[in-house]
Image (cartoon, rainbow, N blue to C red; front, side, top):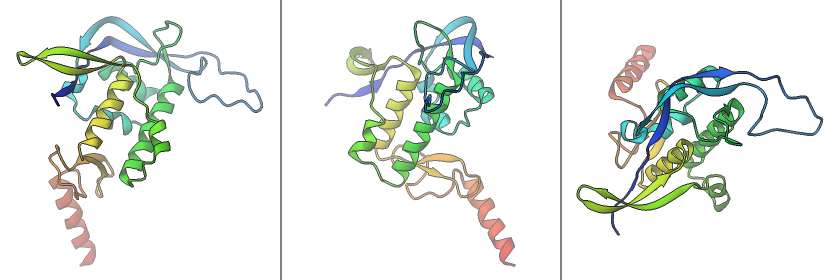
Length: 211
């Protein structure tokens, strides 16, 4: 089978800011999971530039999975990589509740992959939608390209591609940061630390405690 790659270009505004709306009225028995029209939203400011974030950040999905989705952290992420692409009704704003929902989904999937507890039901929570399949020129030849229509879909596709290749996402025993290990990464599949310096620091601290 020919090479398939993720061909993704995404608009990133000069800046982004938080805009707030009155909180939603409390209705007994009603729970809003995503798309909340009330509360804080991320809004773009200034001209837009088309960029290719997956080529610069091959672990962009991991950056999103590690995100603590406060309004401040979400807008920092947007300034670097753009909005998720979950717009509704032709609006250019995205609710923070949307970001929090999708960040939680990524964290959940990371845990399931970590424990190899994926089931047919699990995959239903990670359906890959909004993808076009196209022939694109690459290195002088026509190649099959997966073209996501949103940053969120691009990160899901990147995650699926990495995991299906045999790579895994592990937690550093020294700093607690998530990192990739195994095939296609610079860390062994059984690595316990995100870098050699953290392995040295961890072992030195343990030796000091044993004295």
